[in-house]
Image (cartoon, rainbow, N blue to C red; front, side, top):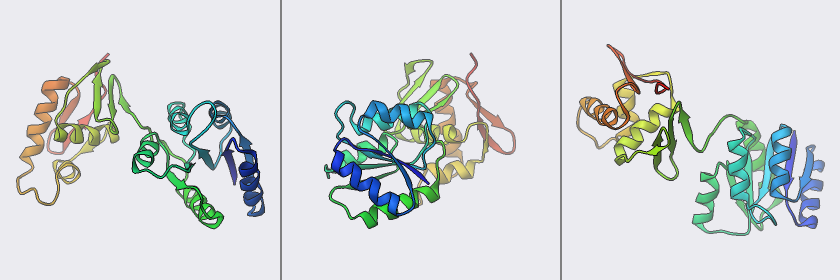
Length: 221
């Protein structure tokens, strides 16, 4: 298993590398965020250990750039900052886990092994199908570059469609994903909200599959 350690403090980087080598890992070290983006984009790593405070780019921006370049190696952020805001910021940027310094090396190893079991797969922070883009963290949507204002339920329903493009989604499945157990209505509410989305996005975006449900297709060019 091969790790990339992104840490600008030489002593900490050396300690981490030595510990992981003793555990049987191969480990590379870079000290700058820009070097991390270049190295991780060119080489497939099983996990990237990413310090948040770097001399050039902060870890949030590094993680965001990795995901923008379709680098899906699991990212474990390491930081001395323990605020909820920082943790949320890191996870929204595309990180998979977050560990606050000081930490035990045994826990770090356990988290790395858990991320390796999970593996790397596409987890874009911004969802995109055709000319439609959705940023779940910032609750923003755009169609052909123009922002579209959606209600909370409209946004949640559209997010489900964007996470399953081209798939036929039944009304019951959409109901289960968007409305909670306290909802006592019927599946007709799905039809109503699909109609709301069509008014804002156009009728060609969400296709009715007769007798089955709905399917998202890419907007026409």
